[in-house]
Image (cartoon, rainbow over all chains, first blue to last red; front, side):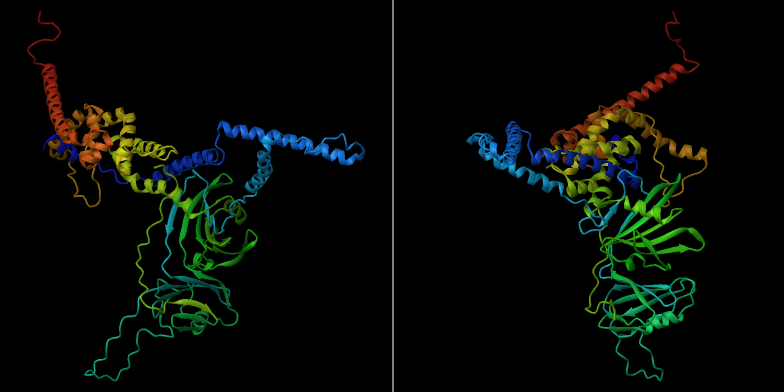
Length: 393
Length: 198
């Protein structure tokens, strides 16, 4: 081997940049770059600092001062009619005709100022700033974006026994063609077709996943998540299935008496970060999952049981683990964004404070700080028209 | 081309790993992160313009990384002089010999040769080292290496040949030096040093 080949063979494998360094560096670099741009751009774009513009500013200020003096004098003259003849009017102190065009500029200046000062701050959970972003240069314990499945949606129901039941539908492929029956084979046994339309077929939950039911529909699937530990096919689940009718993919649910729909909506992208905060000299990590333009049903599509709560003065839902009372999971909305917050050793009031301290931002800001969103790798497999969707009758 | 917003983010996402790998291979992970920071801070400055001759974004970034790596020349040379074979401990690797005596003998030949070559590389002029590593470690084409180093593309091949000869010459020189010094240090060396013979 020649020396270059030896060097080549000794090439160290360093892999990719450690994610935490990559993220922090990105935040540092882009924060500095954006700050530099925001500090410089008004000067560059709005008011170039040239000699001509400075002269115009000075002239405008001078005229403003003269106009003010004139206005006062005019006002004084109105109060003392007897002296009107001697008091100078505003037009009397108007500058020479050569400066008249500038007077218009002065008159317009306050309007411009007013327009800029009325800029509203970004509203968290609004269409322009649907996301809540963690403070800059903050170490995050977790960071992830999960793209929404195409055409999925979720529903969160509350049964008469106050348990919450979550349903999610996933769009999918057209059903496989049923094989033609073989006329030569005769049998007296009636075979139930595995897939039923305008009805549901239920795969019973197994021992390891109690309370999870899969319902096959024409072009996709529906999952019904009951909480773990409940008996299979308990009366509430039976009642729910009996209230379902599927027509052309639409899952019509005629909720029986005592049932309530907490929330429903389409699947949306999930933005997650784990923010360490200090509460009473103790480090606590708050996991925040956000669903812009999403629903509590999507945020709470799990097997937890949620109780009503209040968060930021609004209806919210909270789950507390009986085996770990210090931990909780909260479902709430911030504007049009649904959030799920999980933490322990922190009160709801303290959580409110943390959430309210987050910075409203949009997806571009998220990308700028944390990197591109993952490419949706799932191909669009919606090959038939009767894709499932929920409809509360 | 001044970068901002999504274009800047795209530039970072597409190339950060390549720039980091290049820097970390040469100066280690810690200094590598520093180089990456310098490169992108410089690239994203409001007045930063990619020179026309750099052709591609990657070429431009590699050129900046090469320049910023000069700040870490000492670290790089120290790492080359104290060359340690990379540990390949991935789960897919064939388990290495665990007997320390046996392991030493098995590795000796190749490792010692590599260490000698690396020590010679540490003695190269910085532009020569840049070109060598861009080609041998980063697999750059001659045009990309030319952009990153500022060497005319037509000269890349001849420079690489010259580097090869130079490394050989230095390895040989170092070997001779070692041989001479070990001969001098030997207890039965015939001639005493420093004029003791007189």
